[in-house]
Image 1: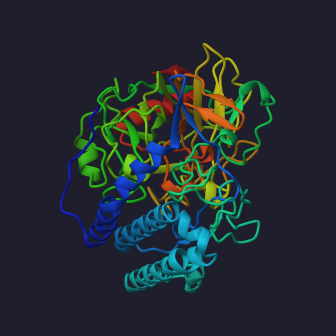
Image 2 (image 1 turned 120 degrees about the vertical axis):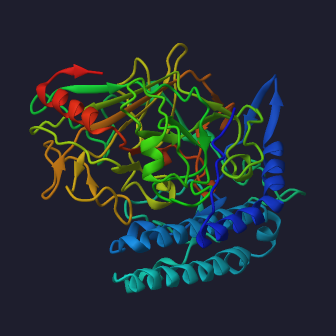
Length: 500
C-alpha cells in the first residue's frame, strides 16, 4: 500500500516534533518491534495476545488543547505546533514507560523521578511559550494553564470520569506482579500494554438493545423539520491514500496524529495542504463538485502482517501494527434538522468529532458507536463488538450539526460547532447545517476470546498512550464542496428528498 508522502518546508515547531520523532525512531522503532515480536505466541496457527493486568500504567496528561480558547488567528499555527510537540513528548514518555519495566520493579519512584517529573518540566516550558505566543498576538492567555503541566501514571483499565480527572489514586507505574528476565511482566501484553486486550471486546449478543448512553452523536434528522438526505459516494480509499498527519488539529506538522488515517474524497490531504490546495485537488467522490476531505483512523488486524508503515512513525514505530483493513463500504450521508430548515456550510468548515484521547481525557467528547450488521439496535461506545459469522463490524458517527454562523474553525477545533440538543434544536447562537453521518462496514474475522486472552484482535489506530481503546475512535471532515453542490445539498434536504 502507498501513502501520501509530499513534504514542504516546515516551520520551527514542526522541526521540534521531527527531532523528537527521530529520537524515538533511533531506538524506539526497534524497541516497538521487539515488544510486538515477543507479544505474540503461535498456537495452532493463530496469533495470541495476552490480556493486560491492572498494574500496568499508561501516561495520563491533561489535554491542554481542549482548555485553550482565546487564540488570535495569527497565533493559531504556532500554538497548534506547540501542542503537537506536546503530543510527541507524551508519546516518547509512554515509550520510555513501556521499555523500563525492570527499572520500575526495582525502584518505586522510578516513574515519577525519571519519566513524569521531566515530562512535567518539558510541558511547562511549552505552556509558557503558548501563553507568550497568545499574548504577543493580542490575545489573553489563561494564567492557569500551568496547572495542566503535570501528568500521572495510571493502570490501563482504570475508568475515567467525564472531566478527564483521574478517579483513583496515582499509580507510579510499578508492576507489582514482578518481571521476567527481559523486563516484561506476565500480564503486560508483551508490548507495553499497547493493546487491545480481551476486556476491550464484547459479544454483540451481550449488548442490550437501545442501551447506549452517549451525550454526543444524536441524529439530527427525524419526522419533522427538514427530512431529506444527500449521499455522496467517495469510495473506500481505493487510491491507498494514507498518512499520520492531522490537517485540522496539527496543520504544518508531520506525523501530527501519531496514527494512520484513511482518506476519501479530497486527494491532497496532508499536514501542509492549504485551502487553495484542497480547492484545486482531485477527488475520489463520484460527484466531482465534492472535494471535501473525509478521514478517520484505520482499523488493523493484528495478525503479524508487516504493513508499508511497519517501521514508520504513526505506524509500527508507535505501536500501530498489523494489516490495515479497508472498509467494505463507506456511506457518507448528510441529513437535516428535526426543528426546521438547514443552511449551507461555509467552504473549508472543519469539524472534528469524537476524541482521539478519550481513554485519558474521559468521555466528554467521545462519539463512538460500534455495532454489527443485523444488530444495529445494539450500539456500544467503549468495546469492540464480536460479530457472528456473516455479520460486518460497523463504525458509525453522527457529526455536530450546529454552526456558530461565523467561524470555519476555533482554537480548540470544537467551539465553533455543537451537537443538537435532545429536542433536535441547536443551542442559542447556533444554526443548523446538514449533519454528516458516516457509516463504515468491515469484513473482519471475529477474534476469539478465551481465558482472558484474545486471538487475532482488530483495533483502531491510536496515540500510543491511548492503548488502542475503542472509545478513542474519531472522525474528521473539511467541507470543500463547490457552492452549487452545497446549495443542492441544502435544497434537497429542505425539500424532503433523497438525493445523491
